[in-house]
Length: 231
Image (cartoon, rainbow, N blue to C red; front, side, top):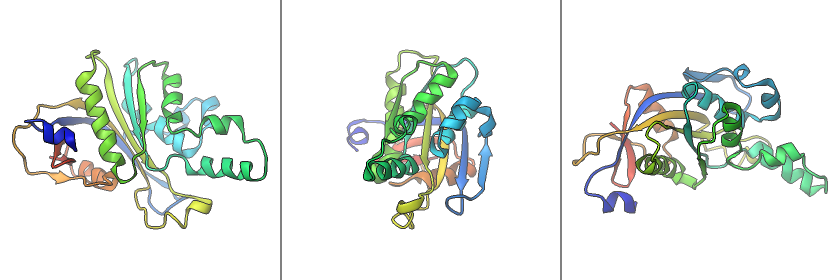
């Protein structure tokens, strides 16, 4: 919030490309793919077998948006991360079994970022953010800050926002959470705005509002009244 209040201009970013998938009817439903999301078979088989739906979705976003050979900085945002992996690990701990080493290593929030960098042989930086209802806002802000301070002008900047459908013990707790989506963005800096344009605020949660804005053809983001908005 202080970022917008302290600056005499409105920070802005341009969506150069995007992709998305949705789980419209909860866990187990068919995916609805939008634009450049690649199919799962695009992930090398050895990696694909070890990844859950959460990590596979992150990888598919990045592979769909990154251009061959480009260095890509990635900012990942998710309210809850991989709940399926978390539940499996907790059940193992509860019955005094050692959790799967692969599952345990992939349970951290930034695992999808690391796997993506390995597949692409890319040593660019990445970050992973979980901030409750402010996750989308904080993820977009982090990406803007990275772009505004990056000395590598050729680096591509990607954002992935994802929350997969809750399963098992978490499903009842998440019954009112409707943002079962994975959205990938390829962003560039845009000219700062010195006045407040007419725009569509993404609000706190941002996921579905962002997807709706992208589908309607909006492609520029501006930080206005402490929230990112589409114009």
